[in-house]
Length: 101
Image 1: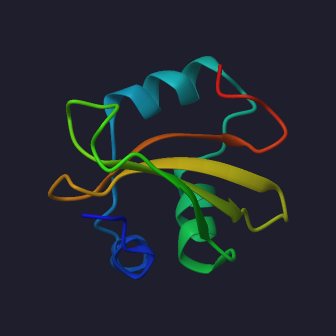
Image 2 (image 1 turned 90 degrees about the horizontal axis):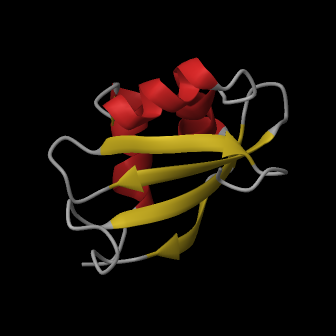
C-alpha cells in the first residue's frame, strides 16, 4: 500500500502520530534535531510532500515514507514516518540541509 499523505497529515493534526524511542535517542544526542512539536507542525501545516516511499521493502517494522516539510521558523525538515504502524510513528527527523547521520 502506498503512503497516504492525507492520512499522515490527519494523524499529525489529531495528535496520534507517535514518536519512537529511536527519535528520542537521536533528539537527545543532537541539538540540531528538530523538536517533536516542530516536526508535527511541519507535517500538519508546513507544505508536506512525500519524497520517497519504501512500501515496506527496507524496514521489517513496516512501510516508511520520507516527508519534506517546513518547521514554524521556516527551516526545511525531513521526517521519516512509519505509516503502516498503528498508530503511525515518527522514526526520525532532521534539517533538510543535513544528511541523516
